[in-house]
Image (tube, rainbow, N blue to C red):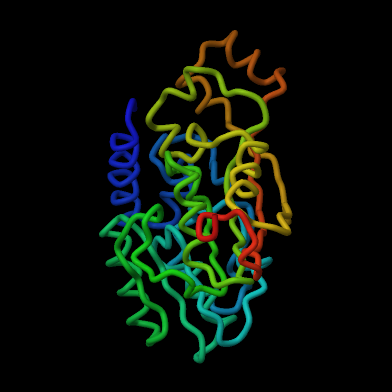
Length: 279
């Protein structure tokens, strides 16, 4: 876990395995990562099943929020979903943008891309496509998206700044993003932070909330708003895999918090910004 390449390969392997599992198996693990617990530990408490466009075959139970709920998607919009998995958020977004819009899902796991394409084919959606690629360097032309969404993905990427820069690049002037993600307040114990399983499980790869919001601002975005925030609790039987009894007690009474946040931000219409496209 010393290099970005090693971290990305770990995530690719884990999520390739997840693509072949059912939702119930994923929900019984740490963000679907396989760091199994005897308690059901699924950090996405939000229920997709009542949303228009929801398809159970595309829901692997891996998210940590409902970004489309706050994404202000309009009919005819072009929407990009980062880390699209089996297509869950793409299909919900497609219900919002309609037949006149377009949804592009991007994922760097071939097994997920294949699963998503199969789901789209079964649904007969011809304006939803899935592209294989890194979200730090999206296979998308600059300035094409009205909206970018993502659900519990940036925390898995070592170079978060590169992702935010590329979001700025692909958005149209005046476009916006809405992303659900995992962030920290305070520092994780080293034994948690250094474990590969916890990285793929969406926790160890998270950065400080202030740093996260700071990266968004530094890349030229405006109207930055935390639309929703909720605490994430790691069950004891996961903690005890990595920490001794004294460390667990210290962690629980400390000031460290792990949170799911849904963040909205806009790319300015004016070229007088300081984003990567105009400075």
